[in-house]
Image (cartoon, rainbow, N blue to C red; front, side):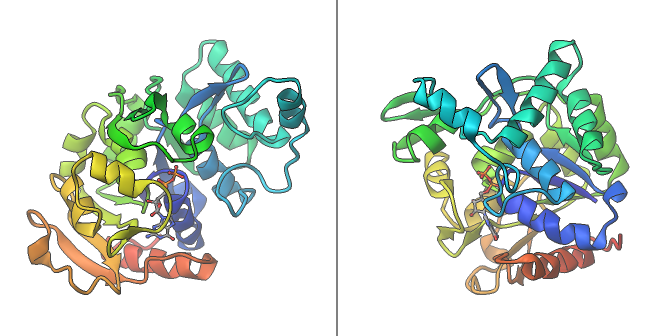
Length: 303
Ligand code: GDP
């Protein structure tokens, strides 16, 4: 099973897939457009959430490690040293571990695979690229890093453009694509979480050769959470599963939409995209497992 993942919606699906697929049979390509340097360390929020989810230590907010403490962050802030993210001690250890390895000359992929091993994770978690390609937004309050938009500015500014950098494909991502005939795209923000993965050189072309199933992150005209509305409007796409299908049109085979989206039919979707209905809100582990079971049936794969 090969999953493309952001940091909130897709990890919920991953939690369900893990019920059926042994860790060793799961490969996840994670967005690194959210990556940011904080207090001297490289933070890769989406990569880390995937690792923490597989290791069973993720919080139910889908960032950071459960039962973490924040003394370092609080001490820094009290001395006037602002941090772009609220980072716990255990989470910070991940960033120090990674940054140390990268500073010694290893790639981000090498560092991530070593991190997986250190957490006892036997799935392959691959950053989408080794290049640093932060997603930058053009807003009415100026150009800013996506993390500043999400946290410092609390998603308030109007967004006119979401600019994802074009990273190079790593040999590990290329090999993972070569090993899988089917790819699942989790219900993450299409523009800011999956969009950067699609900007990796050769990614859209590679996906055209594969059977691709995506879960919509939008129910009717409302994203389940986060700034997908602002980002899809900035990309001039309808805020609906139809807009998601348009964004993925050149490679998508099946889009899973919510049961309540009964208005959407194959005729509304571009090209040859097939529409399937399911219960796609994952409020708990059982919902995640039910959705994962449907997806595994669609891709005809039984882990
Ligand atoms: P980010 O890194 O936190 O922006 O993470 P993502 O991009 O993975 O997650 C945000 C997207 O996931 C939003 O567009 C949500 O609408 C979607 N999402 C979150 N939870 C769910 C869920 O339970 N079901 C579905 N279908 N989508 C979800």
